Image (tube, rainbow, N blue to C red; front, side, top):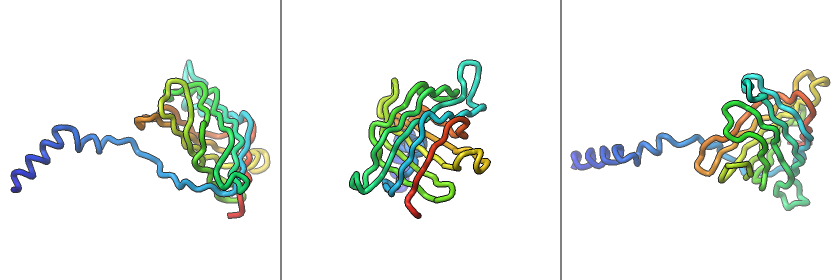
Length: 180
């Protein structure tokens, strides 16, 4: 009996059935919660010097106007576009646009942070899904710290096609959260 189990185990490992599980791309769990929040910004420029080279500027812009309110039955709605993506190590360059929103959750009042996810569209990306995190540190001149934007985009088979995290160096993003 033990010999049979060992042989079955070796056959599974040899066939790749077990090894495929070990190679899965990590997934970010989502809360799928929408709390009363409004996020807006127009063309905020994020620059990441370590993602620049001779053919990439190491930057992207984000424009968004997203809300979650009782007026929309508690579901998120709005527009998000990440444009002018020009970063090393990102397969998707150019523009990524949200086509549906599944989560808009904010936390904090003094430096509110919002988490947004949903489906997106981008050139040559099938099954585009995105996660976005923005920290509103108010205007850099007011508090000394810039807003921070982080995004991650996967395709339908779980491959990362774009990502970036950095400070807003031009423009401003405002998060108006509920009291939490």
